[in-house]
Image (cartoon, rainbow, N blue to C red; front, side, top):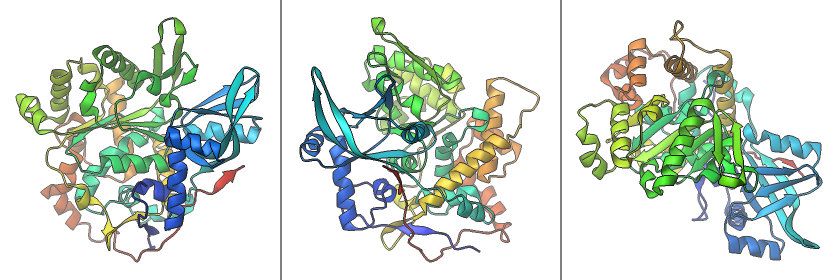
Amino acid sequence: MSDLPLVSLKVYVKDLGVEEIIGFNAYNEQSQKAIAEMLRNAQDKSAFYKAIKYNKPFIFKLNGVTIDVFNDQAILRTPCGFPIVLENLTDEVIEILELNREETVYIKAKAEKVVAGKKKYLRATDVQFIIGTVDLDRAKELLKEYKAYELLALGFGYKPTPESYGLLIPRLLPVFKPQNIPMHVISFTPPNTGKSTYANLLERVWPAYFYTETPSLAQLVGDARYNSYGVAYYYRTLIFDEFDKLGSLERQKLEELWRVLQTGMEQGVWKRGVSSKGEISYRNTVSLLFFGNVTDEDILNYTSQSLTTNHKERLETLIREKYRLATKQFMDRITYAEYLVNTPTTDEILNTRDGEVVYLDPKVTRGLLKLIDQKCFEDFKKVEAKKAGRKAHQKNTFFTVLYHLGLELDLEIFEELYEGSKTFLDYFTSSKKQEVRQKEQKKPKIEEPDIKVEEWDMSKVIT
């Protein structure tokens, strides 16, 4: 069997996330300190001010661009809120900006103050566009010996165990869009089950955006006052963390967000008007992943009121009763739902060795995601061949993704997963699945190979 290209890392800077260390190839103390400083320069307003004053670089993820066609300029939004202006646009730069929907693009730059009459702005200098490298050839080789979900588990730092696969599969589903049909998933689990870690890593290997809290409509859809589009325009997958905290929004904003979400989920149309300021409207089929935490209060006060053990019905009851929202249309748009009270923790599912997490080389992980996405589009499966409509589309999309991830399901289990009476954690840890696994002794299995440290190369730089 082929050796698996695995990498491990050590954290030297406490404020730097694992996903940032991996994404920027920062394996030693010096490089981690440099990356941490450049990220902080883009995220913190005072640090950004000092970076401008002392001509220091900053790094940020490309989240939105406004093009000034008359002045050949692009206005880029930094995380701390200050826009920087990229002047003298070239065809090469435009092509990179257009890649933002299909690739994870970071910008490293400096900026200087410009005062021209009454016009004041920050001009971007020393601009570099950084795009993650993809190793399709190695990904193809490994897919001949391993199932796709086994490899992707390693890509996100999970152990090759049934429990890890049971938590991972739902998180992978919204990555893919067979025949451009989005797949929406809602997953409520206890805290400390790796939801945020997965979402942060996905941002580094896929055009995904992770909201750590419920977003405003200006962030999600756009702002007509500035004629700027939100993240629903620029990405393929959006992840909403702490969806259980919907109640923190003002009632009017919550109901408006609810309406916009359902239209976007169903039709791929993201639209909002801002009184006399105009309207933002565009089409982009985005898959949504809603993460929430299972709490003791919810178990006692809401889900326990439901006599059903069906996961879709339990979540519908929770959202309807707790937040007083119309849930039927929302849940109809959800392909898969799970409300898990007892799950393995992050420490139990992470693939640690000698106190460090081991990952599949991210170049290969990106290659795997691209290959599976391509297969899902080109080889669309129809388990509901004689029907049409939302439910048939959902089932066919669901089955197609599972098939190309390497799951061989009989129709009875597939229906249980879709309807909400069974979860993937149930499926992978059930005694029936264990018996099937014992009969597959001759099939390739993930072994414990020696670790080969290979760099995460994000060095395709255009100056």
